[in-house]
Length: 169
Image 1 (cartoon, rainbow, N blue to C red):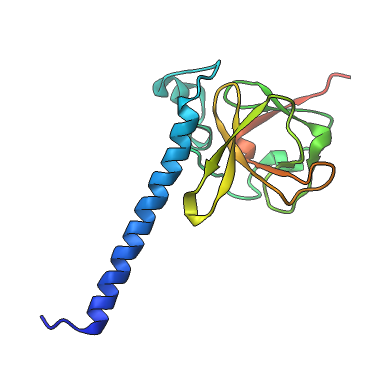
Image 2 (cartoon, rainbow, N blue to C red):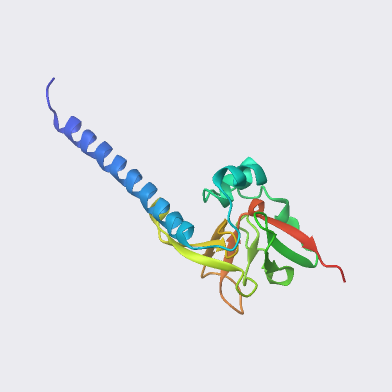
């Protein structure tokens, strides 16, 4: 087999791409490992989480997945109430902090006090801040600094990771 410049460059490019994908997977796993090391008040074994959650909820909450944009009924939830964690039912966001971000995911400008935690997420070749439930560690989404006043933050959450509880008054 003749070694040509094209073959050499192609093989080098493939190796670089494989290395990049491997690194991205490790760094994302590292962010999730940091979250997993935190002692949370609500804990379950992996088998218990799989029993408690639907497969889609498990993939988002326990494996840091992302639901398809515009797939959550919570995008269109505009009643007064509270958005809660689907993993442990902790209150996360008041409905009056929800806004239409145009991203396809429920977005809020502020969580309830002590409701969420944050970890660095360098998956997909970018630096983001992942948001998790402070009670069970379930992955909820990410926070960005392009939101509305008063905070300037956009908590872009996976709807499948949350439930909605209607206000009683």
